[in-house]
Length: 466
Image 1: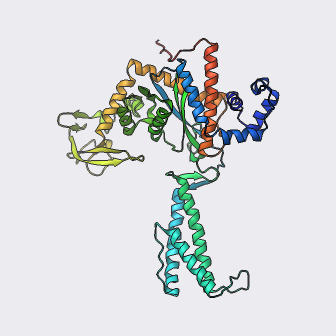
Image 2 (image 1 turned 60 degrees about the horizontal axis):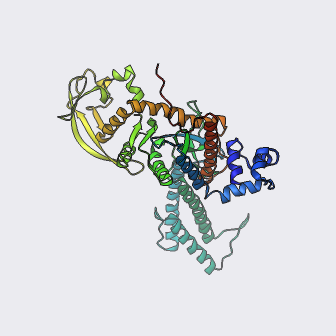
Image 3 (image 1 turned 90 degrees about the vertical axis):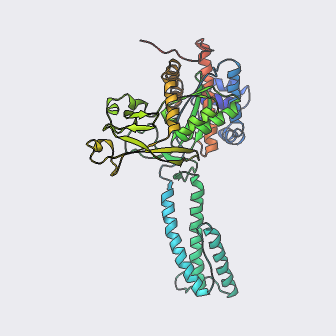
């Protein structure tokens, strides 16, 4: 069954019903069945999501290890890139964190008013706290239910029936408790995100890579990361973050744990640049070939003429000062700690100009009402410069060229040639299973193509010189 699924994904067949049809009609699938009866679509789907879910990742990395043992991997550098693929979820089922927080706060105000009235009428001391709303509401509901039971009261419903004070309070706090339970469910489903999808709670609403319109609709999807070596996909990961910068470190850790070895260098585009990533690669002894986010801007004449940029100021390393276009000095004022989303702490140095009053260049230099300030992380700037020198070296140019060919080419094949632009399964675990099957099929086709073209053992493309 695993052979059938792997071959089906290599032939752009993803639906269990279409795989069933192929098993009955395609001679290649019949050969793989080896005389066995063709499985029906429910059997295929049950095997894929039930039995294969826990084993697929291990099987994928077994294949990668076989490629390594046969000399197909260079183990010199790994090319990393990501894309966004649409989830199997409805487009208009989004839940926003700010909206939930707003309505929950309004309900909390109403709860406080109701609790005050309850305490006055029953002469009790109930309190609903910020952190224990559900527990406190449950306690109030139990108290009111007990009062109804002791009074021998029968709850009435419908027109013409007069409800007692106990029943009115009980129904009110039951509604509060029901809504609070829904809000708690929403909060748990966010998992650190600002939104999630009702039909697939693991999916995050984000702009897809193919949405070029400025006001393009947000769609539920996943951030898919792959690592490529010698044109083979050697690692794959599914993330809920819309930004690639938070995926690099966990992706590298997961890849190293499964591969059993560490690449001496990592090649990635500017979307992965961060001080945390540089620091992690340094601690692991890996050389970064990461393009700085300002790399393309540095080439533009408009950037070089912009007097507000730090790069266009004169820096005195001995005095640790910057000199602006007007010849005034920017000195260090103070330092502050800054914590990122992942918990990484960096030190930011703040420089301030001695006096911007009456400066004829102030409008072009800063929008601040007072003196101009620069907020810099010296550690980040140092590591960015090292990475920049790496990518402009002869080896760095070859790596950057191959990154565009190999990893971006892999996504081009998967999304366009294989026509895989939307997942069929729901949930992060099943989505990862589906993508790993796709990567298995891709590696299978790549190995076959290399054998047919006598290219086995080739790792990097040479840079063409004019």
